[in-house]
Image (cartoon, rainbow, N blue to C red):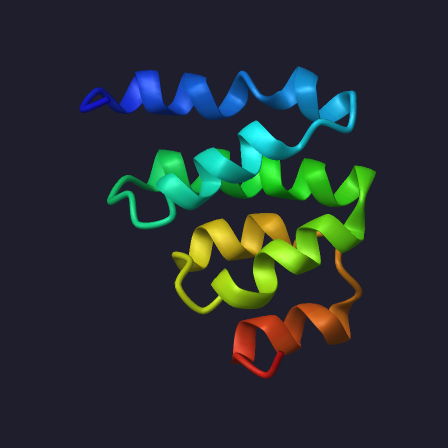
Length: 96
């Protein structure tokens, strides 16, 4: 959608699925919106990725492995917020 609010709602609407360990929709939207120009989308996507990581850290790390260096900084910071500090720094420095 061209409407930022529709895109943001779409991302946040995946939260109930994440709670049920169904990550496909959230990861697909994250991939689609990885280059979105709006900060509010970066925050929403990063937040949902962090929620995926709370349920299954391996799923999040697999997603991030190939994409973290393409992600806007805000999105990445939100996604890795709960990582141990050493691992967070490695992602932020591009050392993964």
